[in-house]
Image (tube, rainbow, N blue to C red; front, side, top):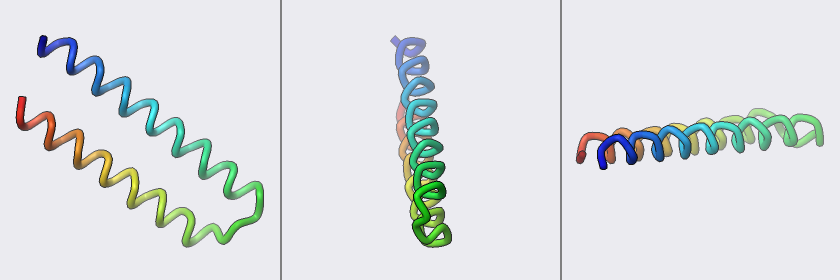
Length: 59
């Protein structure tokens, strides 16, 4: 079971990272304020990473 959760967490992390990358690229190309947008994305990614780490520690 531990192996399955590891694979699932890796997939979720890569999917989230991919979505964030797409959002950042879309935001930059459509001319939004890049600074605030990127800070928001960075905060979201860090919170997601923290959640994965906390889940990892529980296992």
